[in-house]
Image (cartoon, rainbow, N blue to C red; front, top):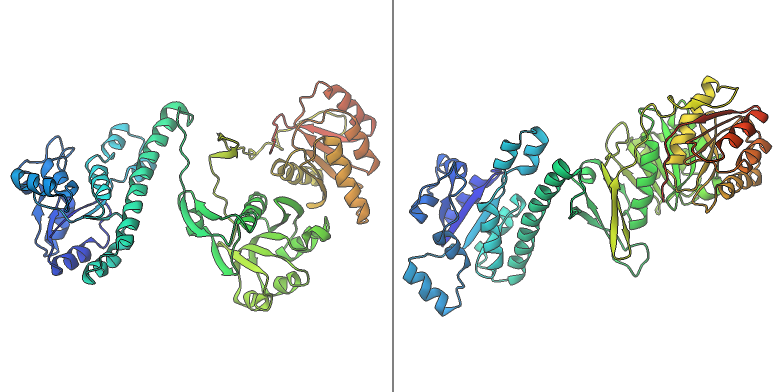
Length: 510
């Protein structure tokens, strides 16, 4: 039996090769892998001794040869294939262990195109695909995590085709994802990420219990290693819907630097938000906006939950708490809450992935775009349009109101006072409806909106929104501007002695 080993990631390869030799395998290897194996005291044969042809063109060609691919691809149960192999002097290769040149890592460390090109693997994918195609006869190993399992499979003389099939699937995933990274990189470099083909690739993190509804299957997939590195289950099982709400809450709660921000989300929409001096104070204030909707909600906290805060949070039913981390004392407080789920990032603060692009499934395809970003100084650089200017407190509230509106489903209107969300209308078919819905909810809960800062994520089209804002005592408004009736809006704000600011940037979220 013969095993061909050629790996870029050499972790664990010496022990794997040693185990294969103990099981009767002859090792064939190339370049740096051969050197590492031999230096570990393991006997190996160079590929060029099998091909009778030296590596050429700076190593670009070394395994692309019939003695390699014929040894992999010929069917062991086909008499014609066996006869041809003997006639051609081709010996079988029974195991192929390959992982590929670090193309992706190279693009992250250099912009030198010649270096990047040289890290596009050719022979490796060819060998992986050949062995995966002939998986019934050849074990193909592309994951360092499969070394021990494969050794055990061979030791047991296991003929279970299912294990071979799983290795085959993983092999094709490996080469497919490799090609996707190359294509996406080239399109990013030369077509501003909008080439003729667009590839979305993710790695499975876990299955969810089901999808949005019990009759649907679901799973979480990640770009890069975001969830592997920043999502830790402390208690409970994350569901499909949980992950959507967590994402919404995370984006908002992590948008204000190191501030102890707390965001409460229900069905993808914020129903509470505050930034105070502590997480406890922020949480208490976040409940003001809509304590009814907060019941069964998802809470994201930009910091570490301690025992005192944990006790406060157990006073109502919450489905999910997602925080930078939890103290051991806080975790003990939550133990008795059987339906409560706890997830953290094992970090002092929440970290957002800051994806550069986003996409949405539509019937028959998907739309793809650059991710919307709120620039650091967008509110600071907004232009005063009225005689009255905002106070320093209102400027702080404007930043929060504008950020929340921009990260919430359009049409959206937010009302902020003293860094606390007091009312919000979102996902409405008209801006006046969003305005009135927010006010109606606030009135029903005896919330006083007088002195609030109001924000809209897109231009206010008619003065009726300003009129409604005046009725509840809004003192300052920020919006992008750009309506054909801007002059009318400005006039109304001056009439009511409000401060009005235009950011000049629309932030629709559909």
